[in-house]
Amino acid sequence: MNAIETIELGDYTVEVFQDDNPDNPRNWDNIGTMVCFHGRYTLGDKHSFGSPDDFLEWWKKNGKGGVLLSLYLYDHSGITMSASSSGNPFSCPWDSGQVGWIYATKETILKEYGEEGKNRITVSMKKKATHYLLNEVKVYDQYLTGEVYGYRVKDKNGEDIEGGCWGFYGYDHEKSGLLEAAKEDIAGDKRQKADKLKTWIKNRVPLERRVYA
Image (tube, rainbow, N blue to C red):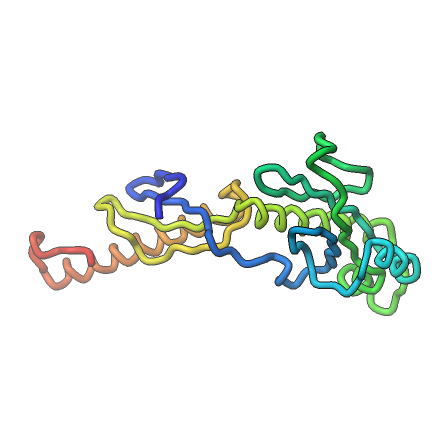
């Protein structure tokens, strides 16, 4: 597997790879439920609605106080998804269209953001829930588009150090946590090498025999 990017951090090189087997974010502990309908792709969460009309009828009865966002899919040399409450966010109407919804019920919002003993949904709570749902869709889109990465670190001799990790969502390596994790691995390797050097000095090991495993 070839690195798609390399980042130099002092004497170390961070090699970034695309994660070919990422975890589906819809398996995580989400507050939103993603209901999608598509003839060729299996998208979102499992559901029992037979049609979009069935879902909308259910939402009319059960959605009071909740948050509902429309999901749109752009299908052209790959698929990408976006959420909106104000129409199709994609500029091409031929290759895109609504594919479903993501929602959080009043009960879910109260559980996540409400105060104990109170049964009232506030504007602030709805804003928080909306922001969270948008982020869920963003992460799911990163999964759909392959923007999931892993890394390994090499020292100045080109040897892999201990560490490396996979499952970082999003190309911004600072926001995803990839770069921070790599720096922690480097710091750990430096501590390990420093401890070895102290031991060698203490035991008067000759320079020619000081080899880092």
